[in-house]
Image 1 (cartoon, one colour):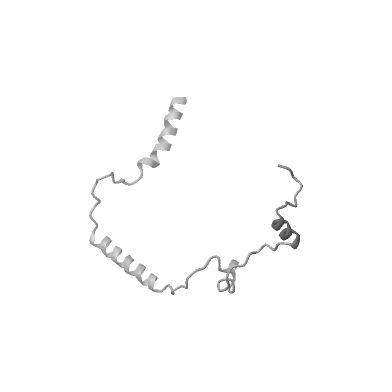
Image 2: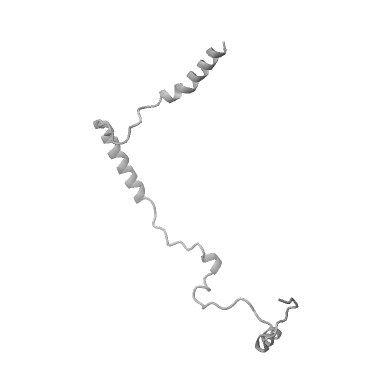
Length: 102
């Protein structure tokens, strides 16, 4: 009984694979289209081209425009870090303000 159930399960699993249309192999020439299929293809191509003409022209996209802002693109870049007067004097004298030893 188990063998029959196993065979039935394999048949149920394999049936959809055999129901598929013929898949062309490498190097196999495609089938010739009928006149109605050729006319349908031409009609679909014309509809596609018409739909492309209906799309309005779009302006150039600047994804970082919101991050920079409008004024940032015209001004030269300035350093974002402000140094304190103590840090400037330490840099001039060559001393470190940290307490870690190397």
